[in-house]
Length: 110
Image (cartoon, rainbow, N blue to C red):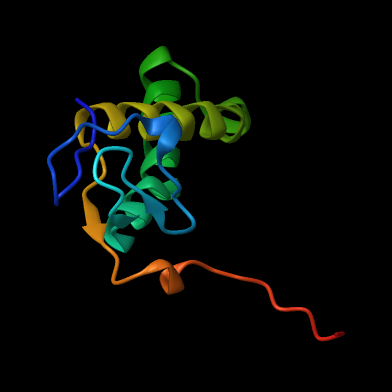
């Protein structure tokens, strides 16, 4: 499943989506952005740690080994949670009012 434009319903590939700034829909040119709630879902660090601890416990590790393997498995578990989350729950896109929603950097020196 790929995310779709709420304006024209065109499927938008993940490589075209900016999770930081507004971007244009390749179909209709409408300015879009990813909803903030979805960005919070992708940063589910604690859920990934719980999965890492549970996997280490199921394998049979205990004590210090459980602690260290859970920490080592935290990042791979977070990556898997993020990837499966993106595949199962594609981001919901929101129409931006205009391109002023994008973050811009202004120079203080003329």
